[in-house]
Image 1 (cartoon, rainbow, N blue to C red):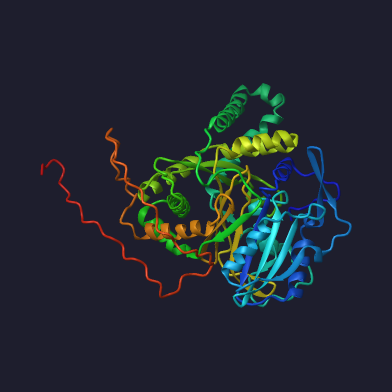
Image 2: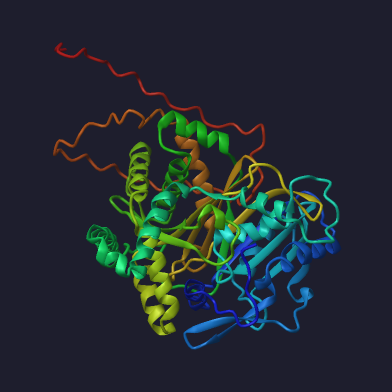
Length: 525
């Protein structure tokens, strides 16, 4: 198990950087929930947490003590599980709106820094079932690590015994095999870049004996320096309703479950990967939201900060933060869904060839060693260059059980580092994908609309007659296209429910274009 902290262990520079990003208007917490169709036994819940999480991960029993720019793990001598596990009932009608309000309230409430930085709530009386909500600070681990923490407390069979002793190592290894990242395609290049760049600091006499080796390492350093320069000179993101001063209150919403098979069918028919299709739908949802708010996004692009997992597969179960960040330009100004998909695919393919994630990881390392004031200045510098944080995680492909109950839905929301007010998290579980949207309440008071627009964008991609498989778009001829008049989308009802649409739901039939007349080559019409 990759969590060997003890009393006095220093936080790594990167973990310290995420600790320093904590701000009253931007809490550095990852928030996740399990949704159940049945009530949970509270006693079994606490035993599961004690055996599967608290005894397994020492960080959950250590608080953080800061001293200047550094910090270390300090054992909590009065650790009490009851101070971290709470039991409440949802107010009002106990429906999705009540759940959304409760998640939003807890997402806006800071953790107690005099105790280990995590907290769990059992939310009872939710649609006849219950919800488990976990809040955990980013300095304990990144998204992949924290999903591992959650999954380590689950079972893969419905009749697992009441937890009394820590699970054996083979079970722990099986958990790590259930977690991957949709951006894992980037990792091979990143790992090669990391291995090469890490050697820069360890060259001695060997470098003098192999001049060509010196050139190879120097070229890597120059490439990284070039990437850093491009990141620094990148212009600020345009001013939209998605970006501005932040407040304390946050809002949380989520989409309905979308079958992964449906997304795969779209990707096979029109081109691109599953990831490309999902990101295109999110881009279209943000475009629709700007139109709904009365803005014209024509020609605009906004940047999303996308985490990229840098862990070696052998380190999959380690806590802490081991990821880099990339800028992904979202073409929200493009009204044609096919062109929007083509642009997203092209940019994602280009990202797979850049060392940008590694460079960003080294920046985080430096931030963790710098005074908080300097770190804050750099965070703001990079924060103005993007509008959102966007992350994708592939969860378990089969059902899991927690505290003796089957998990119906699994969702999480990411913190918006860099003083951003929008976070989008995509998580798949048991053959379905759900999009979570976390926003600053002052900027985006209705994130459920973005979630709803995401669903509508997937419907449009599913029904559209277009395809990018053959790259049939003609080359630019210098003749500008006429801009289309933008119309705001009709007001959509809030749909923050994780339940799938009912079987009787009818979707609009796709409009078919008349077939084009094809003239044989060399024949004039």
